[in-house]
Image 1 (cartoon, rainbow, N blue to C red):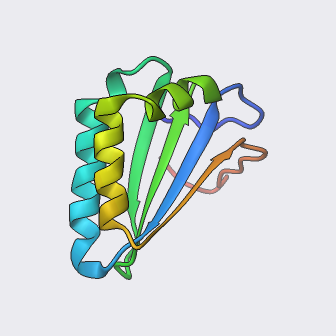
Image 2: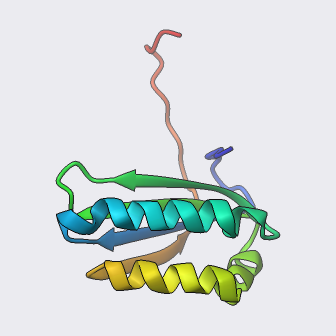
Length: 112
């Protein structure tokens, strides 16, 4: 489960894919398949959240890993890499960066 906590030890990968609208769902399906079939079983994986833009031209993967070493190991995994290459082929551009969480804020007036 995704937990967003400032200054935690895990690393956050945010991948923003630019894609043509007709390929957006295929990219989402490919990311979900990669996560469910391969990545979620790899050491150090914590969570992944796939987001699609309402304008149809972006897909964002917000993923958490125990540390950057675990993430690098996933990138070297042949099965994961096959899925990643398919994602790159579907996308027009990929913006891939590691982040740390520096601040979180939640609404105080939300019921429930």
